[in-house]
Amino acid sequence: MKAFNDLADFSSEEISSLIELAGRLDAKPEPEALKGKVLSLLFLSPSLRTLASFQAAMTRLGGGSFVISPDMSIHGLETRPGIVMDGTAAEHIREAVPVIASYGDAIGIRAFAERKNIETDLEESEFSALIDLIDTPYINMESAMNHPCQSLADWKTIDDLGIPANGGRFVLSWAYHPKALPLAVPAASLHMAAQRGMDVTVLRPEGFELPQPLMQKAAAAAEASGGSVVETDDRREAMQDAHVIYAKSWSSTRHYGDRLADQKLREEHLDWCVDEPWFDNAREDCRFMHCLPVRRGVVVADGILDGPRSVVIAEARNRMLAQMAVLHQMLGGSS
Ligand code: CP
Image (cartoon, rainbow, N blue to C red):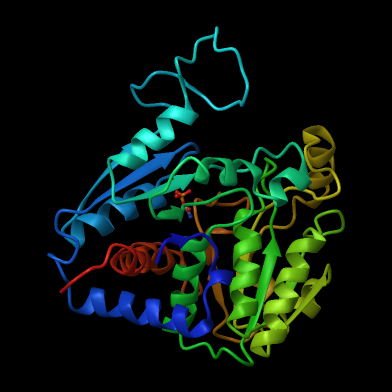
């Protein structure tokens, strides 16, 4: 495996095989599998889970890792192309990224969306420019429109719950958040559920429709897997017989890059906080998923997060296991 950039690059059989390996590495640890291997981790955007789970994954497999982020004690990093560097930044990513990559056998990169221009973000312009600077195997640790590590872990979490692929009902719901957030997780989880063969409903208020290219990509995956994808603003219709609600806030597509217009629109939907009444007509055992971090009392009520519906901690632990499987395959793990 030369790259782990998008679940769409893998067949369902390949994904199942990764998930099986993740389960096997959990049940039967391989502490020598990646002995002597090094993973470089470049975080141009903040993290808790991704940072900690990749480091833990490498350690559990007998390898090592190091982390670089702009808020560490490094020379200021310039990211803009063609800039005259007469300001505070003393190092350009054009040198820093290949240097960091050269110290490892593979590199993980996180770079959130700029959220100025939707076309630029949909094209993954920034992430592609970073990848063009390296020739080592790489892992997308969250780019403008993707978070494949989260989606692999989420697929495993849904499998662990015994939710059927075909016939499983997955609701991806927008939730209120005071800030305009990236589209990476909604884009990735929408595609993951469609690729898994589930009946997917995107539940969102008007103005928060997901961009058409993301919906079309998911619809194509659903067609291939026997699933379906629909979109609605009707909560009761969406939640009917749902197995899973996956909550996430995201930016308004209509006002992408316009912070004030986005904020004005989202403030009309303060009541989009997942709570028990949302589950009235869902399956009795309908589960609540979220990639974390999550704002309590804003995105979801405490009672849901602390109650039996929530699987957010299992989801987060599955990040480590799923990434162990990816690293094992990418770095040629031997038992
Ligand atoms: N879910 C997730 O990627 O968490 P972090 O942003 O903390 O890494």
